[in-house]
Length: 181
Image (tube, rainbow, N blue to C red; front, side):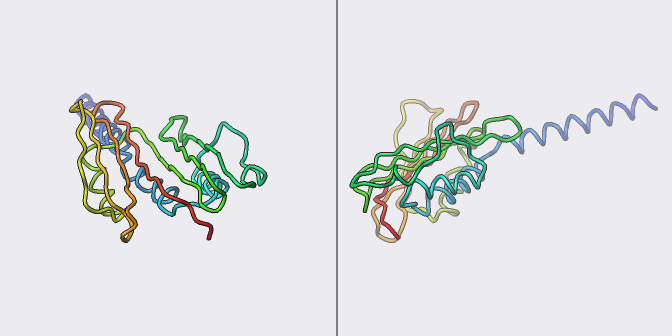
């Protein structure tokens, strides 16, 4: 009888472990949430990105963004940071500001691992209010790329790239012109 109970408990433990691993595997909602908090508000200054990213747990290998870096007629700043939880790298972000101080071009991208290629497009459409999806051709069936229109008539596009093979990497990006608020 004890042996049966041990096997039953071991089976339940393995089932729970498999369920937990499966649940941890899908970081699709995390990726969309991070993008919604970092890139979707269309930050106008690199220091804004740095504050937002830091509050979400991102850590940059570079030094802090200083006021001097944001001064002058032109901005040319690449900010990158990574998100590490429980010793595991879950994601990263890069934001590039280039151009005139009063309206630089910005490329904002957030990436993560453990993302479902099947789940991510639907989350983007519902959470980020993206519309008119265009699936883009890929030379590899394991790679899914798509783009959407975002904003009211702004003509801006949100782009997604996700791999169906392990470690299931994905990224969401947007390009825009920043305006001071």
